[in-house]
Image (cartoon, rainbow, N blue to C red; front, side, top):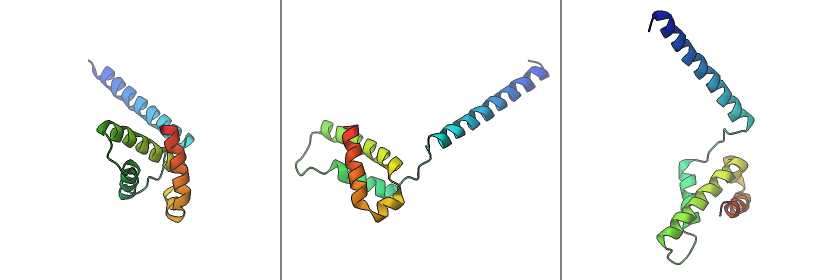
Length: 105
């Protein structure tokens, strides 16, 4: 490959990367995909409490299914109910979380 082709290839990759990065940034902004996640300790606690809400033992398959529903519900809840709201109104969080868990279940 001669020098002109190498430079053209490098420029092409650079331009493609720049355009792709800009497009992805626009999508993130357009669909509000940048969320302020809850602190990891809080997320972990929410998931653990969600999974272990039954007083009797569950089969492993039920636990795995419940874990997926709990993670899905938290993911959707964080999009709608930010951490600051969670801190000041946990009952509001629980309402949203329960609604989202029904959607995910």
